[in-house]
Image (cartoon, rainbow, N blue to C red; front, side, top):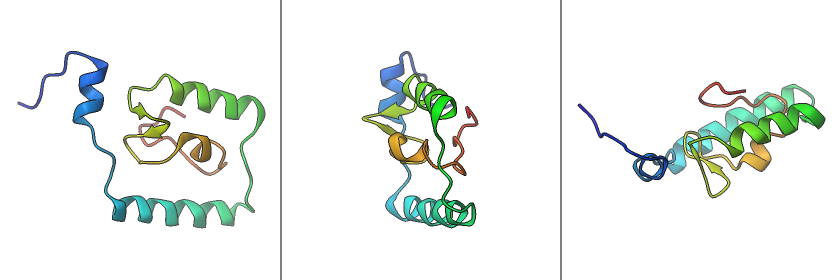
Length: 88
C-alpha cells in the first residue's frame, strides 16, 4: 500500500535524493547536453519562472531538488536542463 503522508514535511522526510553515483551520472549527462548547446544559459523571465516554480515545489529542501539532487540555483540556469517531474 505504501506510506500515507499527511503533510508536506512528511513527504520531504520520506523522499531521499538520488545516491552519489546517480547524481554524478545526471551531472555528466547535463554537462554534455549543455556543452552541445554552446553553454547557453537561461535568463530573465524564463529563469525567474523556473526559480519560482522550484521555490514552491514540494520536492525542494535546503535549495536542492529531492528528485534529482541538483542545487536549483545552478540547474535552473542551464538552458538544456529540465525539471525531473516536468514542472518546467
